[in-house]
Length: 264
Image (cartoon, rainbow, N blue to C red; front, side, top):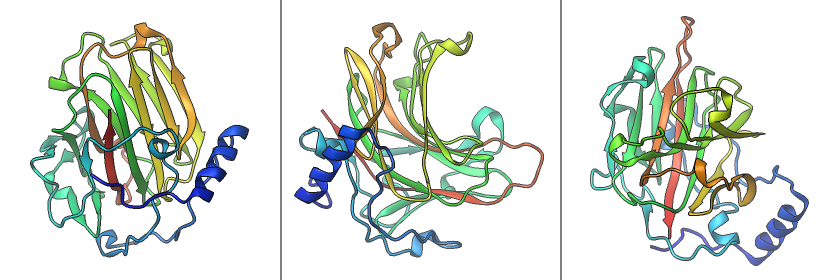
């Protein structure tokens, strides 16, 4: 599978300079408009932005989804959730998803009907994943999250790798490596950065036998090399827009994914 757009040499040089000074505010030059009512009608013509895979030479894509079709998510690639929402709140409905114009959109309603789906591809131990995502100007009760989840939902230490998650503070993106089922705050390794999630950004995670590393637009922002913290089982990509109600009205919100790419 080929990448949608080859990164220009000048952009790569700029990215290398950015990485050298540790600046995480780099954004692709692209329109900032967010479709208010019908995101599926938006013209998606933005460049692919700075990618960890390109900057770090991860090689060819071996699995994933470019969402270059129309309708429901490809059933050969995705298991779309159909049931109760996160922590039993609201509903995860297949109808919340729509693929059009090169992106997958998951919408969350005012009453907590939203969506999530797990990949049927790359059910593996170790690898590299990169996902291009943006959100609406969302309600803080809707939390977008890109994560790796244990295959078969089984893990002795409740392993979970949230490599891009935005919670109540909509100005922050978080990384959370879960490596225990319960305990004090120390049972997770965390990082956070200020970011505008309404803009397209590329979020990536590298998982090797020696550690887990996270990237935003190609720039390093998370690392944990404690082998005791690594997932002991194979994992797979999931995409979720989770609802955390507070009893107050919820503003409809959405998350869009341009592509998901997996590398060896």
